[in-house]
Amino acid sequence: MTTDLSAQNFLLLQQRRLTEKLKERLGYLGIYYKRNSKNFFRNLSKEDQQEFLKQLRRDYRTIILNYFLENTTLNQKIDDFVNTAFFADISVAQLVEIHMGLMDEFSKQLKLEGRSEEVLLDYRLTLIDTIAHLCEMYRRSIPRES
Image 1 (cartoon, one colour):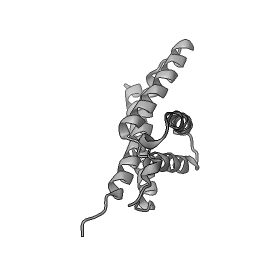
Image 2 (cartoon, helix red, strand yellow):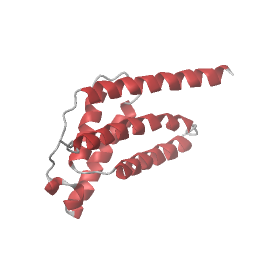
Image 3 (cartoon, rainbow, N blue to C red):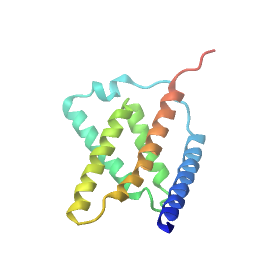
Image 4 (cartoon, rainbow, N blue to C red):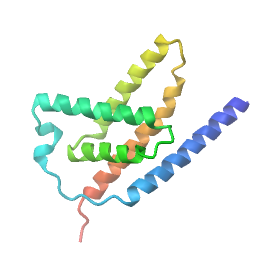
């Protein structure tokens, strides 16, 4: 019973933390009306696409590994990651794919070590945080009607 309560309290605390982080980050973002389509992921060469995805995956892995630490630079890392994804016109589905791939790798590693993979469920917050930020950037990129 106390385990359930402490898990609920932890989840509530993380949800509040996520809300605060989003408010902090989205409060100072500018609105982007123009992006150069030459830099869109789909317009890159296959080789450049592979390299771009590798880098995006490395950046996201760093975010995941630091997400629950008291890290003052994490918001900036998420900002940079989302800006990169936004200007390359990366879809939310591609971000989910990156997230799930990393969770699968972490799960396999935890199993090899004989540890529970339940802790990985907490990293849904990382995905929600990142997707919310990216969606807000896309929403703000739509020119407002006069």
